[in-house]
Length: 391
Image 1: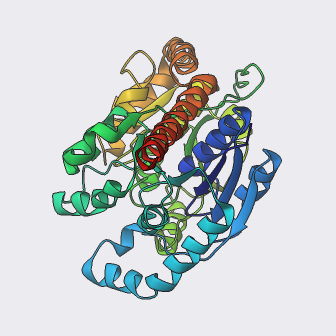
Image 2: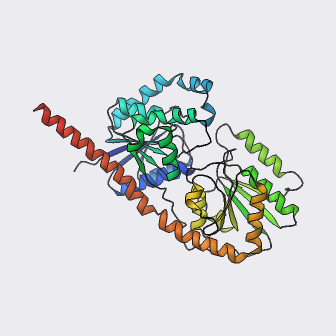
Image 3: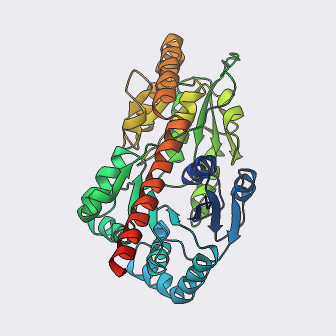
């Protein structure tokens, strides 16, 4: 039997949400007998992890659609030089000769076009669900999905937002909830030391809103609570000034010495072990891997009641939900956990049980592999019918 090949395009070599899901997709497809080749435009920590899973890695410069580019001037600058980049992509596709091109995130529309024009079946894995964007922006981002033969969406939220923006691709949408890998060892409780430790994990960006967690920590301390905050993450492209602002805020008298910026942490489990609560203050999420990781580490969660968080957190059952941009609400929720330790233990236990049941790795891998199997089977059937028509 000839081994099937999948070429997977990823927008970066980082190790954040969509990148971690790519690793799980790679592991699943390797387990199902696929040869996996991953192409990225840059080097970074993702590459060693890919090679450890048995994937081949290709480096190729290509444009990536960033949030800052979603404007007439931004799109115009991206279009410049796209012709040459598209030619490079098509040459790589022809050299690799994949049975499927797997485009990880909606930020790579040029790869969808490269696969379509090269005659290769295309899957796009959509991790973005920005209902806050203007309707015209959402529609513009969704238009390239017409070039995909199938589109995997990572949550019901993403499914609804994508279907609303592009109803003409609804029948091609496949819902596959993220698969989140647990710590590998039984989670341990933190030894109390008189200080309550908050943790934020994610990009240092306005959308992730760690500034709101800083504000909540300041409120707790002003109320006489012994609370400190650890922020795990680095700024994405274009958000360096925002990250500098966070550090300046942390140096003000009400927070000085109470905030630690520990950078990107992988694995995340040591940071979770030294925390008492994960705070997820995002303004919008399609899923929110950090929340599920905290649940798998048996830590209570305080999260904003947005999009994907509503699929991973049930208020008062697997975590506490709060409004967006509301440091007072976060401080109040954390105060409850400080004053009611039994509540924190109950939320942590329920959160871990439900996360294990709903967002397991085996289920995720089987569903992703099934999408590609379905696509290659339908392609082979179509090719067979064409062959019969020519005899």
